[in-house]
Image 1 (cartoon, rainbow, N blue to C red):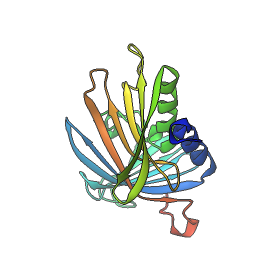
Image 2: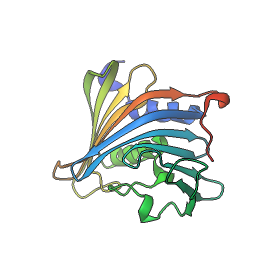
Image 3: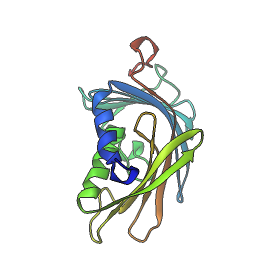
Image 4: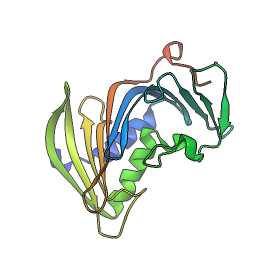
Length: 198
């Protein structure tokens, strides 16, 4: 099987489906907002923890899929005050409209798969992202179709674990929406080393 014959999105989806949890440092940049850097943790079936490095350094946000609620500690977990919010609260959405309950790799891959259904997938080749070798894949929608406001994704899938380590989203006019780098990805972290989800 050649590089261009591989369905990297399907491989990444299978890898995500098989994992129990992961932790990663996310760095998000966009034209209309300051850079966001977060220590991100995810545990199935949908628990999320975000420890903000910048902006709002020290703030912690968790999502519990059982309660459907988000807890926000502006000055760090288990400190006062603690706010309980709905995941669609605008106060805790990103400038791009991302919600904490739809922020994991599985949600991203579902969006990419939905875009694939209405467009084309191109495997560009292999590139270096930092110290990692990654397959560069572009998914472009046909005109008039969007998924969460995105018309085109560029993704780089790490050749060692198959999951994306860089994602660029664009609108229909090829204007960049957001670039996300995923660094220091740890998959299936032992429970004793996993940061608690509040």
